[in-house]
Image: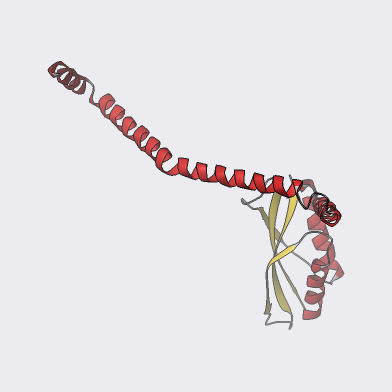
Length: 187
């Protein structure tokens, strides 16, 4: 035993940084192992149990009373058609300039002029989808602003009015409309 102690002291004297680094790495490895063992493995087992339970439910449903239910099958077909229709309404991201053009055309139809549009792609985009947020302002009388908002609401595009505010202008008697819109595109 004393020989091992002497060897350890010699290593410590000769290369302290390497010995400290080894000790730190050992502590990190033990902490990671303990975290995995105590926290992650029970959570993984819980998730595996939930998955197995849901798989059993699906098997029972498919092999049980709903398998021959014509109404349920029709609803499933209809839902599939709805999903296909939804995906069909989402343009490819190369159609972004067309969206800007459509916004400008709606403004012209309402008798407005959009001077500047700012936009950005959101970081929270979902798998296969890109979300773009746009912001712009228009100045006009209330009737034109109302018509523009109505045209945006009736657009065939998926436009989400995230933010809209209306304020009175001091000169000319018109109003200022600030709009925040978002939409989605396929990658």
